[in-house]
Amino acid sequence: MTVDAKGSIKVLLVEDEEFTRTLIRDSLTKIGMTVVDVGSVHEALEVIEDFDPHVVVSDLDLGPGPDGADLLYKVEQTRPWTGMVVLTAHSSPELALHGATRIPESATYLVKSQISSTDYLRTAIEESIVHPGSLNLSSKNSEDQFVISASQGEILRMIADGLSNAAIARERDVTLRAAEALIQRTFAALGVKGDPDVNSRVVAVRLWQQGKVVVK
Image (cartoon, rainbow, N blue to C red):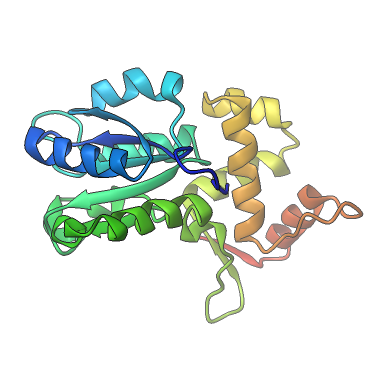
């Protein structure tokens, strides 16, 4: 996704500290972004579909209840076209919360001390939209096998079982748009190009059958 027009970037900001939330909201609004700010995962999920943001910027520690990692995992599963920026006071996810592996690999990580300049935050937001995550890039291990995530492995299994996009959406309990985005990300992780003369599903399944795919 590319956003060119000034003011067209829509940001869902999730931060439980009111002072920080207001500071970030005002900073982004001043540079022409449209911001909806909330203080919890529950509030974020209430507004996300109607607001339809280009990117979710979320703190990790949101107090009692679901944390930022829970929210971003939900976003990755149901809105994989949406950019994600992790906002935290800590220098690493491991220090921010227990079980930091729950943070999607496709999220851009930003330490709060780095946002004294609005330009730094704007760059992180724009990059998360234009390049929505490292999972979109194919990677191989030392044995020249494509390495994909567990979620992508599940998508590949369903494709191999002959499920249509609509059936995959029903199986994962997501919208058709989300399922199609997940399928395209799986193809990208396998290095399968969108060649109109080649059936991407057949190519992806063949790679799996040939032992060229590893699910991490």
